[in-house]
Length: 247
Image (tube, rainbow, N blue to C red; front, side, top):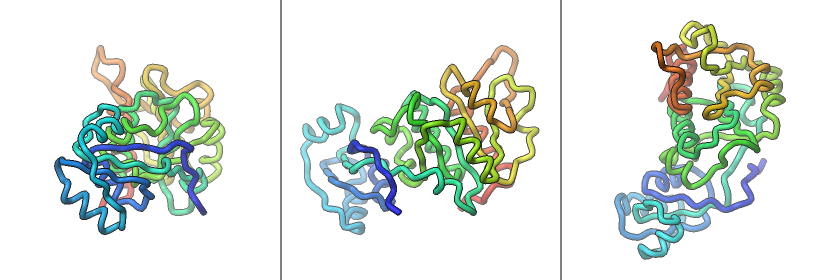
């Protein structure tokens, strides 16, 4: 089945981001290369995939990257390849991260990078009230988003019901919750639910969580940055608590 894509082309830049893209099987519409670090590795990876490399000057690369640091390489994709929710909850998939309203692109990129590192089976993003997949997100993830299955949904609360129907236990990360995440026995199939910056998980979504857990804080500290909190929770649930081994 063909994977649905965003309607808009996605431009990414930076040596590490483009190398990760080339290591994936995602189609590349254009690859433009100039002087920069890892040029030889990028050209070799493009050759292995059969992706043509077009030489480009500094001004053209800067224009395509909209002034961001591009390290001499820019790639254009036809769009980001989202999966379906059914792909993420197929038999054998043991974990999923559900984001309810993360709007800062750097936070989202950092979260996706951690999700990939911790071995999350996939990530669910809402259609609204959430940052989309942008060049800044790709850069902040260091290109790791290209190896991470993601789905966009119109209703997060309804998605939690679908996940529970597929055998997932939904765990909401809620600052101030009476139960510590370190005291929770890891469910067999787990969906970690994380809210956005400031507002946290919306009440309707929160009611769909089987468990509410918090990360313990020292006195006087109310919360952590969303990406940091998500990283702690993912490693606790997916790695330390006997999740799938990381190769």
